[in-house]
Length: 221
Image (cartoon, rainbow, N blue to C red; front, side, top):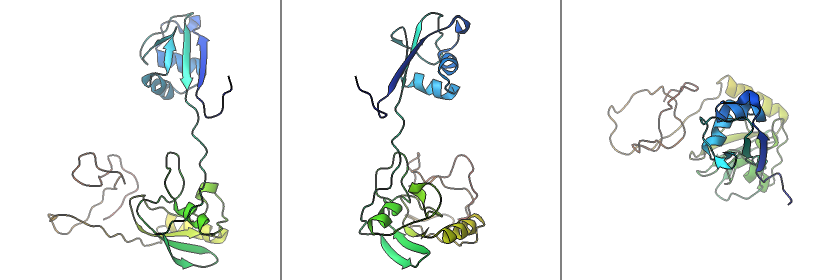
């Protein structure tokens, strides 16, 4: 049987005497070198068996039994896919930077789990050459806009621009302005919000975005 890097792997070992009575997640962590958290996740996903029977993370192991773990295949490498994005306009371009009008539904750069279009892929598809340091799929990216947000996004084309713009965004020299569309009649009609948003749909269904449960970078809205 031929296996590839994209196939899950099965690993099995006999439980040693020294782990008699240990929890499954603790035994996996000790025997296979995983973190306790990762071992618990594998058990919760039904990827752990003892002598052929699926077990939970808190079950106990018996010395001499065979512990088998299915290890998921690693995620595929993130790659830039060059493609034309017809509704992504170029609003400024020189030898150092290019500024695009990013539409909704386009990510800033490729990332694990995202299969849609990206600004970096759109620029590559339009013939732009981005030559800066950093990971290949994020070259030139000095700031990001969420997939669900449209607006201007600057991308560095040269190393000098990349270094300078990164520092300016880090020092908050750049002024950012956002426009939001609100349905209904807010009460009060004006005010200041200081909780960062998650950038993800609200779980309550009361609105398209929700405040972050855990603090991130402070924001003023």
